[in-house]
Length: 169
Length: 150
Image (cartoon, rainbow over all chains, first blue to last red; front, side):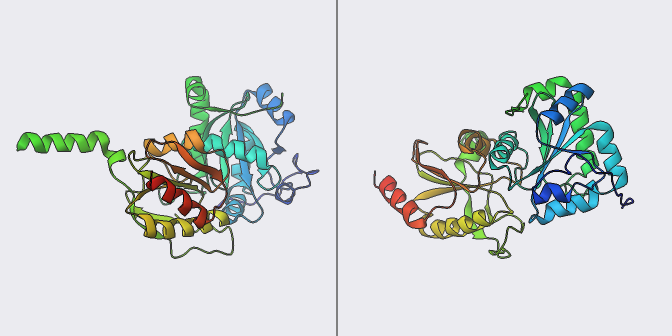
C-alpha cells in the first residue's frame, strides 16, 4: 500500500453532506456534481471519474482508505481525470439516473458506483467496488481507470456504447 | 436417431437462455437483515442467468447486493418460489454482477434506477406488476392467481 496523503482542501470543503464533507481533505481534487466539474473536463479534454458512495457503505470506506487517500493514486487521478464525488443519500434522482445508466450498459450498479463520463455527459464505462490490487476476478482501480482512458481515447467506443446523462451546461 | 439428437442439441444452443429456468432458489444464509452490508448474492440457484420465459407467468426481481430493502424482498421472493415454482417462472437479476443478454432486455425495458424492482409478467410478457420498492407477498400472490387462472 502506498503512502497516505493529507491533501489540500479540494472543492468539497463547503459541501454539507457527510459523505462529501468526509472527503474534503482527501488528496484527490474532488468536485461536487455540477457545471464547474463538466466545464473543467471540457477545458482539459479529460473524462470524469465519478464516485457515488454513502457514509454507511463499508465498500465505499474501503475505496476511500485504499485508493482515494493514497498519494500515488490521487496524483494519477488528478493527472488524468476530473474527479467528482456524489453522496448517494443527498442526490436520489441523480443517483437513480447513474445507476440506470450503469445497469443498461451491463456494468455493476450497486454501491460504490465508479463511473467514467465524457465531458458532454455520456456515461461510457463503469464499475462498482475496485480494490487497490486485482482480487477475486475484480480488476484493480488502476486497471479499470486505465481501461477507461483507453476507451476515452477511442472515441467510437464512447459514442456507441454509452448512456447520455442529463447534465446542466 | 443421430439427426434427432443433433436437432435437439441445436435447439438447446439456440434457445439456451430462454429454455432453462432458474431453479432451486435459496436465500444466502449469511444475509444480515439489520443493515445495508454487502453479503454477496442475495439469492442463489441453478442457471442464475435465465431471463423471461414465454408461455408462463414470470416473476422478476432486480436487486443490489448491499441493499437492506433488496434483502427483505429476496426473502419474500424465495418464499414465493417455494410456493409457486410449478406455475411461475422466477427471474433473479443481480445488478452487482454481469447480466445475460436475456436479463439485460428486462433491465433496459423496466429498471429505472431504484432497487429492489419487482415485475410480474404474463405469459406474453405484458407487465401485470411493475414497481420499484418492496411489495407484500399477498399482493403478488393475488396477481399470480389471477394470471395463472386466465
